[in-house]
Structure formats: structure tokens, C-alpha cells
Amino acid sequence: MTFAPKVLLHIKLPVTFNNGKTVPTSYFMELEKKFVKEYGGYTRVIPPSGGEWKDKKSGKVYLDLSITYEVFIEKTRFEDMVRPQLDDLIEELREKFEQKAMACYYFDVTSTQF
Image 1 (cartoon, rainbow, N blue to C red):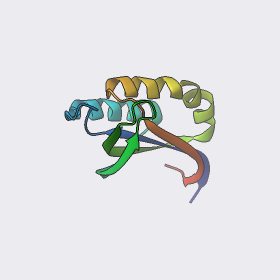
Image 2 (image 1 turned 120 degrees about the horizontal axis):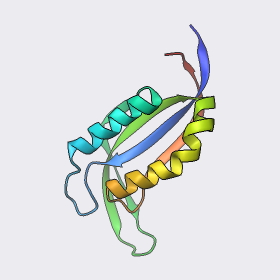
Image 3 (image 1 turned 30 degrees about the vertical axis):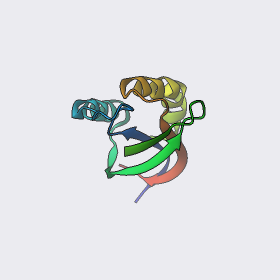
């Protein structure tokens, strides 16, 4: 078995908009196609996880139910192609999912080759 340096990208997406309406399934399907096309695949972690966060400006507390996506990307590809565009991707998702904030994080991992 071979292992390779990769980056594990986590993106948490809400199942509802901030106004409480359900995010259409098509939004997730479109993103999943993008992950396969641009990064070679993804893992959708379900059922939704729950949490709360407080808006610093208004003090309002929001309840979030989120689906987490995990995407393994070869480290060199992440550094050269993904990282420079990550801010744009998160902003695009924040606007599309009508969110005040988005949770995204990544870290280096060593993973089996696939």
C-alpha cells in the first residue's frame, strides 16, 4: 500500500437558510458534481450535525444543522490550484446558501493513494 501527502478539506454547509427555509437538494448535488470534477471526489458526512453560533454584531444566536463535506486533495495540487481560490469558493457558497458565515478548514494528512 502506498501513502501520499494530501490535504483534507472540510466544508460545513447548512441544510437550511438563515430564514429557516430548507436548502434545495439541487444545491448539494451541484456542489458534489463540482467536487468530483475539480478534486476527484468527496465524502458527505451525514446525518447533519448541529450547533449554534452567535452573531458578534447583533448578538443573535443561530441554530445550524450542517452537512460536512470532506475532500482529499493531493498536497501539491491543493497548494498550487485550490488554496489560491479557496476564499472565492467559500464566498460563493456563503452567498448561494445565504449564510452570514461559513465553516471551512483544512489540514495536512498522509493518506492512502486512491
